[in-house]
Length: 202
Image (cartoon, rainbow, N blue to C red; front, side):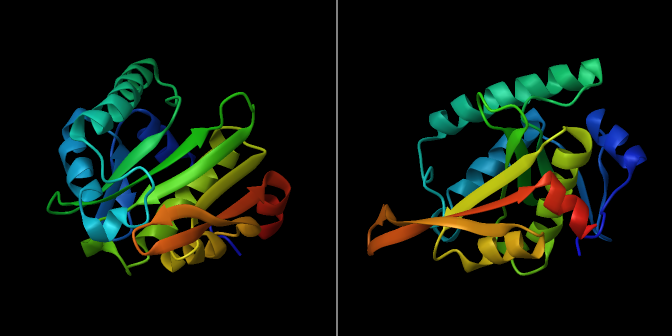
């Protein structure tokens, strides 16, 4: 069963750019310009980017990707609506960066969304990714009108696909030797969850 992690009041606070409690010692809120340096630092960590096809990369590429998301987020907060690609940052009580998560619409496919999450090494193994994935899934189905949410990851990224399984996602496919790595190749695995299956799990 997938247990609810938040409520409509919390959704409203998030939509307006406020931080809400995320577990006992963490908070989560929509991405802000001040978050970018922490995100870039995380993506530069070899232990993190070994599972990311888009990292490591030049800082300017990250800025080119995240700046429009941040700008759209600021505009959406002003207008009291969800951003085009709701992207969230998690921090602890001391303000330390503990990861990010997003629920993004698939281009040209209305109602189709993708969920993603990346955490710095210090946040691994604490269930943070699972709770972040669960919240993104809730937002997709309960707030954004999704009829299908998908995700993919490296075949060797056990932590990522175990997170998806805990959140009710089903393995839907595998592309063999999709990623070329220094030590060889790795598969790309696909997971998905429909609105009907999500409703059944509640």
